[in-house]
Length: 400
Image (cartoon, rainbow, N blue to C red):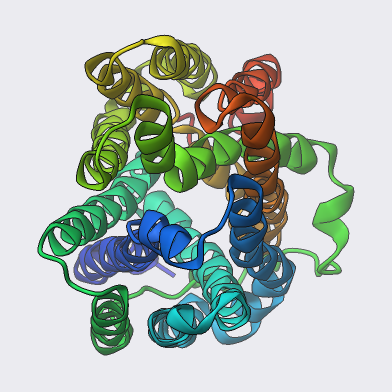
């Protein structure tokens, strides 16, 4: 087969890039639509910090259950069909949250579980597709896909802030957001490229392996721990930034949500400029430096003594942790034949942070206040700097 016929179709690759951006943006919008309403739901149900942490545990539990199943699902039906199915479930869950939360904790927890399940499966599938497109392009682009997620979260958070300011009920907001996700996302990802590229007839097929084999790989597990630290920092920011500003600094609800949006915007910018830094300086050096910046921002957010300082801290916190999760996904997909299994394992480990983070911060918040409880994040980010060598590209993969 000629080298021309083996080269990726540029038109298909460009369509794959656009569709992958759409997948990341849509899932970010879905998540932030819910996250922007957390303070309102908390107040309506009169939840303490610890009780809110347990409620938020439902979304993390759904994700953790979905993630180990997502790798085999993507390998069987492909990333496109997986994202389409999970986006429909995600939108339906948002509708369920909107309709169920006024009636108590039980319907809220059930709907949050399905939102987490859908988001977890969606996450693995779109990251597998992102890795395929990244390899076709031959340069780092995964952080920009995650910037697309952040763009979606910023849009969702700002929309939520505007609707709260206008007095729009939680139910109306989340039902509308869910309908938008179900209508748009399945159509937007039709341009996904095949997850496995065509091989020349004389190329040997990669050896078949058990779906559980990736769980026995030391590098994959270390990358998972690396992602866990950044996921904990990101998830804590998503769940608690607005609450910490409202409770710790005495700001209004709208200012609290704007602080959350600032955190997300900083993460978006970091992910957009990240590929250039990674191509120039490599994964290990860049992620170590940015983890240190995130710790500095977190401490400023907690101990800044003034909302302006907290907003500046949110900028450093969000920008500094922006590359951890996407770099971990790229590291897991260095070998395309095993990308789905490894990305599933790494994401599963990372999402343990979303499982443990909400109740941990909630319980700590009961004793020292939510604001000071956030310092727990710094410990995990320090661990990430120590094991960042695990994300170094494998021999034979693109040195990004």
